[in-house]
Image (cartoon, rainbow, N blue to C red; front, side, top):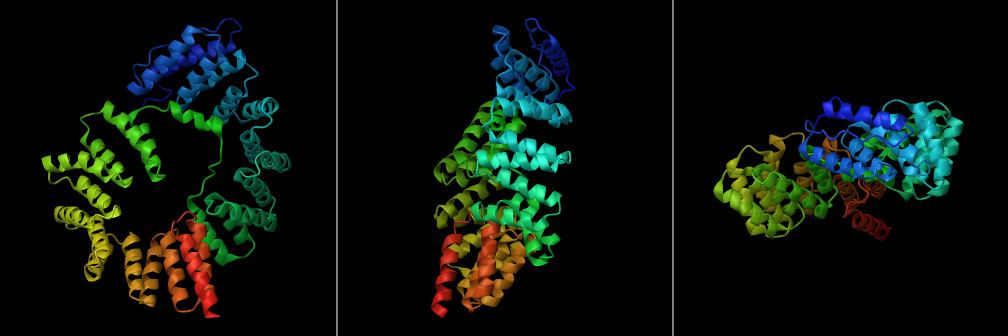
Length: 463
């Protein structure tokens, strides 16, 4: 996709800017989007036609501006929002979008002025408050930022944004104990918030609580603010282009929102029906969703036409494994390993199947081979730890879990494994620390609640 430098975007920017400055009926925008991605061009052409049908309708200009923003065309988007604001100054949403685009382009003063007007128009919209707080804090106005974050908390007491903002203000003033107290309370309500863990690690380190700081900073290392903002979420519906849609489908799959991911991939298949890699990916998404029959209907014909199709074979092996069809899983996993004998992923998958089939020696050998083929992968160590734990070889199991954690400190199952191995030998204090950290690292782990109950029961029984 071409960005603002494209000829169409430059022409559109000029027309929109003229529209925003004019007090007369707004001139119509350009309709030449030929140098953009075809999907983007089709969307912008359709939305431009809507504007042409009624150029005095602010909502039509706003939708066009949102589509421009969604596809990276910030200059014409900013001008489009200006037109929408001029046509309907009482609609807070267009001024809000204008503020965010201006801030992204570095016009923070104008963005702040816009946001103040948004708050006057929509005083009950919490994201306007915490965004105001963040921008004020960036400008060094801690007192005004604190007030904005407190307002966000009053409006949305269940939203972490205001609390994180208050903690940021405390950190900016070196009030580290106060910041830690706010963040500990926040994490008790929303465990696993990695951005809050990152801030808490900073507070702990300043307070000299080094061991707690180290773990919190590791857990929070990938944390970014991801706070609720419905007016910003609306933008995603206007994203177009193959790469953007594929990226969105992948993210939906990672979030286990498989229906939405598959619907998006189906749309992409309509655009590129001959794209075999995309078809394999679609089949893999069905397998990940547990729809192995549908996955097989897509992937088996591909494998029949090309038996060397490694990815399709791996997808079906995984699908059959996680639906409990171990014989078929073993068949496809063995075929995948035969196709790529040096593949760590194939050895790991075949080892998992062998373990589930009760062939633990074969599983250990395959997982050891996978660990050797890819020393950075924590999963073979995790699964070997689980096998050793089942055999009551607790010290060896813990060593494997710790090896997994050295590669991925956020692996909840490995922390649960460490907790179980401590509890098995009566070291309940260490077990409680490990299970608490598992909750911080991966609060939605489906095995966490049972592990916590198991360890608590064992501790009570031992008294």
